[in-house]
Length: 94
Length: 94
Image (cartoon, rainbow over the protein chains, first blue to last red):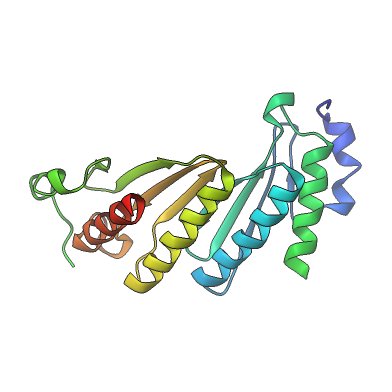
């Protein structure tokens, strides 16, 4: 799957609120009331990632979860990352 | 709780196999067969951390989980970190 360049990424800006869009990776942090809520989100996210066969880097700092999405085999961001980021936003707003 | 200096940390070296012991933080990475197994470990670890009221930084990279333990309010490693690291080792070998 081809990596997306900056112009292509810009087309997704409107549909990916909250995400930092860069050709090398998509990044977003989420904050929760506490550690337990953060871990619950990680579990929901993990189930989603496993279903899509695409796994973000996940950094947990107490009640804050930071995600980095990249398609390492393509050397940057692809539509797979955009699809996963969109689903993660739906998860958070659910 | 006072932070431990290098000499004090050395006393724990024998009982904390696998951990990188530094006065600022204790660090260890664990590898698992796959992402699902890594997430299961994070859940077990999260329950343990919540019980101890002490929460490590947790970085998940597919099947690898890297932990950083530090007592931020003490400005470095304390016995709370050593206690949690010991319990994590027992978790992994369980």
